Amino acid sequence: MGYALGQLFPNEINDMFVAIEPWLEQLLEKAVPWLPSWLADVVIEDGAPAALDLLYDVTAPYIPADYIREWEGMAAGANCSVRQIQHVSLFPQASKAACTIFLSEKNATKGGSGFHLRALDFDPTSYVADFSTLFVYHYKTKPMFANFAWIAMTGCLTCMNNVPITLSEKAYGGHSQLIPYGLPWMQMMRRSLEYNNMNDINNYIREVNNANSSTPQTVSIHIGYTDQKNQSIIGWEIGYNFSQSFGWNDFTPTPTHPVWRDIVLWPKNSNPTTTCVKDMVDAQYGSIDADWMANYYSPNDMTGDTQVVGFDLKNMSVYYANSRKRTSQGPLCAYYRQRTFLDMNALFNEPSP
Image (cartoon, rainbow, N blue to C red):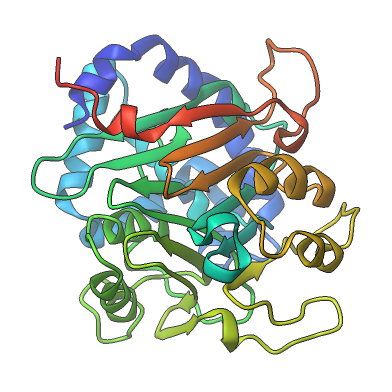
């Protein structure tokens, strides 16, 4: 797996590596103050490429073998170095993004079905915008999988399977213990959506975030799932030997973030911001849908500078935008750009060639 993708996009994949390597060096150099010392020292002494090589070396024993074979196939198909693909796939291990996770259902939403906003706040000027892709994996023995990402980045950043269950993440700073070895978080997220029900997914998340796991997860993040089939939403705070789940009633209310029935919301934790989150949610409560999330909430909170994805799970549709490509015109940030409307049923049901 991966060879066909490499054959389809050899020029794009190799162009991406040329563009992104200097940017990755700058990214890791800026991250040195908060990187764990074992990785920061390598960045300082040997440079970002060596640090990314080290990230692969210490995580490779825990990465599912089929994912590694996909990287190797992609490299063979595109005639590029597999190390370059590993760098692109693993650099999120050494980065932080503010982001918004917004899950809603039942009483909070229009028609009572599940809606999910993924707003990625990272770097709208990064070169990844030029290589944004949506890949759909048509598995035969497990749920089909849609990955809203960038060429050569095969782990899950913003994802949906055909159950349908949706998944997104954001940074979490509340659990500081990190380990160098273990399962990278994007590969963990992708693996979780290969299950077809939330009970198995929740058990998997607990297992990999336990110190006794054979594939321990290594960094601290928030993740959020929306499951239309079983009408459930759940958020997680996870890290090495730590996991805590959140339903809508597990939050401590604050003046700016009350408890909303049937909503799990982690707003972005960075500037800029405009309209008050509480005011927007209060005004729309009971009529929230993917259109409002993607086209009103996102731009008014200025969240999703790099990517905006609004999922309508019942209707299997998506509002989708990425930050501006270098060859394009118009607003830079994804939250101000025109959304593309996607019919996910059509994509999942596309016949084999």
